Image (cartoon, rainbow, N blue to C red; front, side, top):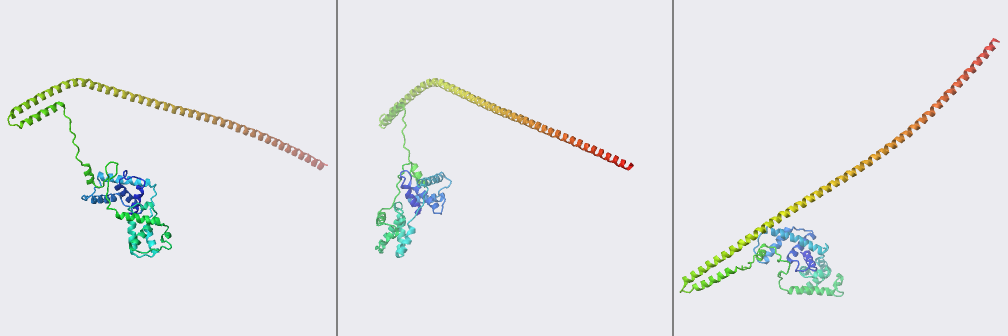
Length: 396
């Protein structure tokens, strides 16, 4: 309750009563306060409570609010919309500090009697009906409430040194709080006055809304044609003269004859312009039909042109894609050919190297073979000489 009232006063410090209705802002403030104080309630519960309160205040029969009606859906949408307005105006800074939490500590420090605590608590609740919560800090309001309760019960408070300095308050703020509370208790009972200028006044109950909407419509007199005015005047004259007792029948006959003549003249006058109007309307209808056919033909032509343009665009895009694909394929082919040429050149180089290696190895082996042969020949010749020498010595 206290948090909702503080949010209510903060919102109307920036916005006007003429733009936002008090009833829906009060409901939205209470709904938002239930979320801030970690005791959330559904929108349905808030709307039902405010609907019942409004019925009681306006002395209407308390009826069940249909949750599936258009009225309830409109109320729910308006409730959430107003809650967003409140959050936007406060910049989503909704921290609230109440004077209630300081009262018990201050009274315990001052060692006052216990009955003073309930009186100060009641004054703190009543201070939320004023703008004290947005004008002063919670400590100043708590000191003012304690001072007012002590004055009412005639309980002395220490003044040397002053007791309010220990609680970060000043005497002028305390006097202003007491003055505002005294003025609040001197005012009569509050009554709701619709001052919202944005359309109808906001209501939670369907009865009050229906009573406002069901106002008797003003009858607008239809202006009859000139001939009918003449006939009405003749009939009124005839009816006025009928009241005389002398010539009732004659006057009635005269009035009837005049009515018949006027009707015949009206029929003739109506028939003449109708023929002319029919003759004029026929070419008009024809021209309208021709104009419609022409416009439809033009529209169809425009559509065909647009379709052809779209087709041409698609064709051009497809051609461009094919060109890009052809270019990519040509590039890939060139890359493949260059890679193949490089591979061929590398293979040729490797083959030439292998050939040179093979040729060098053969010559060396041949030279080695010849040298070994020479050595064997030399060895064989040397051994034959030694044998001849041995043979010569043996013969000798």
